[in-house]
Length: 153
Image (tube, rainbow, N blue to C red; front, top):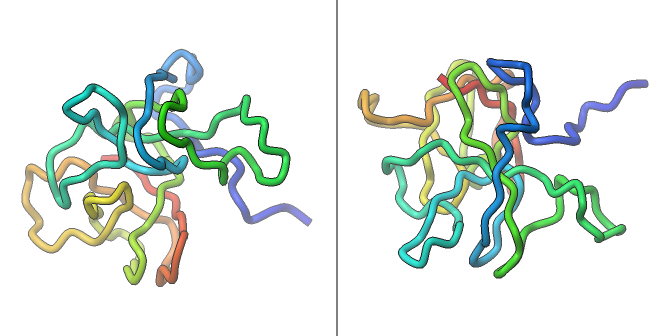
């Protein structure tokens, strides 16, 4: 029987060659989970994206394949303050596994924006300047700690 749980954040790439070459690293501040939308703070450290519906560069924290926590899968192990955070700049066409904000109900073809805490929520404005819009591949209601597949457009 095949697994329905994803084991990586980057599920497929719009440009499939050299995916590992797109991975970048920098120091983090605070707790960042793989699948969070992230940004640089004033101290030039990576943090969970802090502005709901705000502009961002589509930076997505990915799992650390070198994580030494043997009690959890790498995709479930958070980065802590002063950890080196691995991330990608998601490109249009990429399929990524990102966190949905608690209490958010999503139907297929929903437009998603930053919730201001690293997670995503439904867009209510339809503004053209909302950069992180996605197309989830499943309908779901988020209780807590739910990820969904998001197509970057």
